[in-house]
Image 1 (cartoon, rainbow, N blue to C red):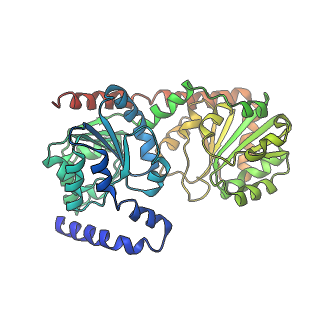
Image 2 (cartoon, helix red, strand yellow):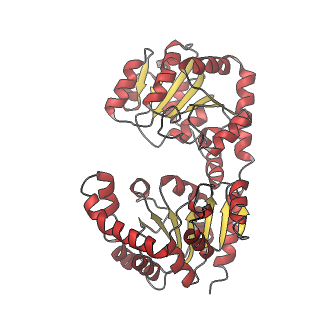
Image 3 (spheres, rainbow, N blue to C red):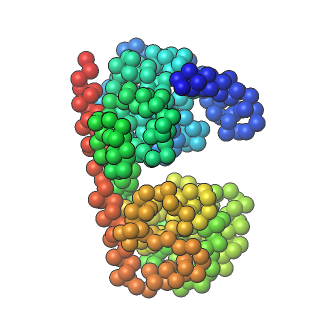
Length: 416
C-alpha cells in the first residue's frame, strides 16, 4: 500500500502543472509551491529555532491561532512557520503578522518531505485538526521531531478504521500526541491501541471567547442600531435570502437588521438590496445617509462581522439552507445571543450540541423563520434565556489552549 501511495502521489504532483492551466484555484495551488524551498533557504537559517504549524485551510488556521499566539508569547526568539495546503487558506493569511514565515506545504512525496524537513529543521511540528501526510510523518519520526495533532476529530468512515487502512494507521505511530475534540474521536483512536490521546476539546472556543474581551465598538454600527432590537444575519447565501427577506420586509420599525452576505460582489449586493422594501444602506454608502433612519444595513465589506455580533440581540447564521456549509456559529454564541440556522447541519457537531441545549434553532422554511423570529423579538425572557444558553455553551467548552500549550511547552523546554 505504501508503494501504491507513493506512485499515486508522485503522478499527482507531475500532473498538477497541467491541471493548473484550467482553473484559477489550481493555478494558485501549483504556482504557490514553485519556490517554497528557495523561500525557506532565504528566510530560515541553521541557527533558527523553528516551531512549525500546518493548517489545511483557513478554518484550521483559526483553530490554531490561540495556540500559536501563546507559543509566540512564551518563545519570542523562536521562528513560527505556518504552512497551508489550500489556496483559500494561504491567500487569506499570507500577509499575517502572526508568523515569521507563511508558505504552502509541498506535495507529500518522499523527496519533498525529506527536503522540506531538512531545510526547515523544526523543533516541533503541530498539525491542526486534519491532514495525515504519511511521508512527512515518517520523516518527522525518523528525525525524532516531536509531532502533535491538535483539535483533531476522527470518524468511523475514515481509512484508519477500515480493513484496508493498515498503511494509514501505521503513519499514526509517528505522532507523539493527539489532542482530540470529542469523546467519540478518543474512543475510536484508543481502540486502535493508541494511548497518547487527550480529550481537550476545540481550540475554536478559546479563539471566540477572547473576542468578548476586546473592544468591539464600531461608531457607525452604534449610530445605526440606535437602541433598537438588532438582528444580525451573518454569512448569508441566496438560499438564506429566500428565508429571511419576507420577515425583514414586514418587521416592526423597532427592529433593525445588519446583513453580512457571504459574497460581497456588487451584483450580489444589488440583488439583495432590490428584494428589501425597507430603508436600506450599504457599507460603501454609509456616509451619504443618516444611519439611524435606516432599517437595514448591508455590510458589503469584510472584517467587521465578529464585532457586529456584539450589537446583535438575535443572530441568523447562513450556509445551512443550501449546500455551502454552515458558517461560524461560535462567534455570535460567545456574545450570548440566540442563534438560528438552516436545515443542513448534520456534519456540524457544535451546532447539533447547541441545538440540544436549546441555544440554537433550525428552520426549513420562511414561515418557520418568521414564527421563530417573532417569538424571539416579542418575548424578551425567551430571547435572553436562549442567548444565555449559547453564551454558557462557549464558556463551558474553553480551556483546550491551556492544556495543549502546557504539553507543547514541556516538549520545547527539553530541547537543548
